[in-house]
Image 1 (tube, rainbow, N blue to C red):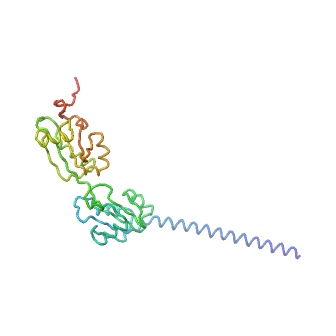
Image 2 (image 1 turned 180 degrees about the horizontal axis):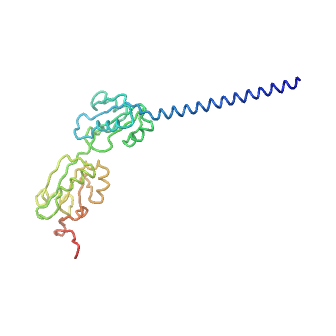
Image 3 (image 1 turned 135 degrees about the vertical axis):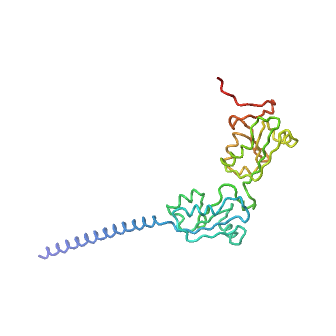
Length: 271
């Protein structure tokens, strides 16, 4: 009888442990499910962020920092606060030093910037994590270089025409290409006749062999895509000037070969 009692006691103990273990597992499963649901609900909520724009003090042609703010605000976010400071203000200088800002305009993003529903959009804007925040600086001209306090990306354009070739193409057609295709911001434009003293000086200085021609100031170097493409159509001189040298690259246009003095015309299909 005593032996049976011991067996019953042992059985109850095992049963008790089994029930307890099962309860623990059930509780753990419910907790895991609850945690996943809570995690999914949190992920579905808009990211709560704060935005701070540091804008150039004087640059009408710079990238519009407010437009960048609006792009961020269009994302799946809840903006808890937004401030704007000029780069030469005390607050602006402090932020520039804290986040080691090199280009203006710049935007500092605080809060839940690492949530999946906003991370990709911020990364596409070139955001980099710095001091528990995200920093977005101007990627392309026109912007202000903080170190030199100079405006970068304003290009001076010179069209070298040729009055001795009335049939030659109009070099101002380059304006649409460099503006629309490469996003170049033109600060000033001028036309110089290849037959003038100034025109002949340019031809000699840059060993130009075709007219019309196009010359861009050294600020053109701040446009990466233009630099990469320019190697196929022209040269970048030691003083930084971009010289267009291949009229044929424009397609069926008429230009003058200064080496031979001949006017080159596009070939017409034979009957």
